[in-house]
Image 1 (cartoon, rainbow, N blue to C red):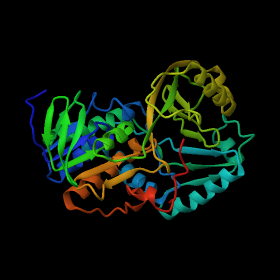
Image 2: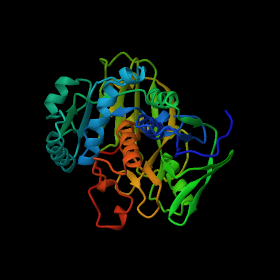
Image 3: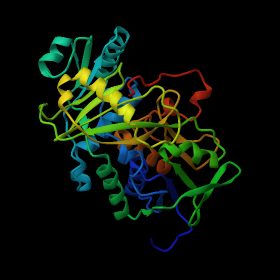
Image 4: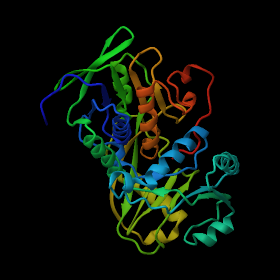
Length: 384
C-alpha cells in the first residue's frame, strides 16, 4: 500500500467486475483520479465465486442489450486486455418442463430475435439428438443460444483492474468504507478504515453489500444478499466436451462444463437472505439427485468440491443503475441478481458515460432507482 491520498475525483466502492470495469472505463475517458475501495481483495467476492455464465437469452430487452454489448467485449478481451479469460462458446441450453415456462420461452425468443440474438427453439426430439445424455422424458422444449457460453470471472475482473491501474487508477484493498460524507443533497466523499477521502462522486458497486453502503448515504436500497451454492465434479469424461451451460428452468438447476470437470448447482427457493457462505452437504445431495435425473450418466461422477457465493437480488431481478435523483454525485450499479459478471463490461461503460458526460445512450428507465415506488415494471424471468 502506498501513501494515503485524501482526495479523488471518483470513489468506486467494490472491487468486483462492475467496480473494476467502471474504473477502467472512466480512466479510458480521461477521468483517471479514480480510486477503487475494496474491503477484502479484488474479485474475491461474488465475482470470483460465480460460475462465469455469459448469455444473451434474457426475457427483458434491457438485459438483452447489456448482454449484447458485454459479449462483444468478452469476444475480444485478450486483444484489449492481454488476458485469456477462457471464453468457451459452448452455448446455453434452457429446458422447460411446464407449459407455462415453455410459452414464456417462446415469447422470449421473439424478443431476443428482435435484437438479433441467435437462438433456436427445440422440441424434445431435437434436444435428444444433440445432447443424447439428457433425459428429456419430462421436457416440453428448450431454447439454445450458440453464441453463449462461460468464462473465468476472476481473470476477467483482474483484467479490468490491471488495465485500470495502468491508466492511473488507484486500488485500495483491505480497506472498508465506513461512512458516506454528505452535505445536503450532495456527496462529499467517504470515510474508511484507513482515513477519509474527499470526492464529488461515489459509485456504489458493492454487490451483496450494496444496501449497507446505500444506508450510509441515507438510502433504502432494495437489494438483498442470498447464498448460491455450486459444486464441481472430479474429472469426468463421459460427456462430450465442451458441455454447454444447461439450465433446467423449472428445477432451477444448471450444469456446465469446466473441462475436464463439470460444475453444477441449483437455486434454493427457501434460502433466506443473508451473508451465509457455508456449503451444505444435504443441499449438495439434493443437487446431485436433480442432476442424475436430468443426465443419468452423472450417477458415475464423483464430487470434488463445493463453494458458496452471494447473489444481490432486487424485487424484480433487475439491477439499479444510475445516479440517485436526489443525491448529487451518488451512483449505483448494484442488484444484478446473479448477472453482474456477464453484464459488467457494459455497465462499466454506461456508468462512466453518466459520470463523464452526464448522460448515456442506454435507456436506464427499467433500472432506475425509484422504479419500485411506481407501477411495477417488467421483471426478468430468466433467473436461476
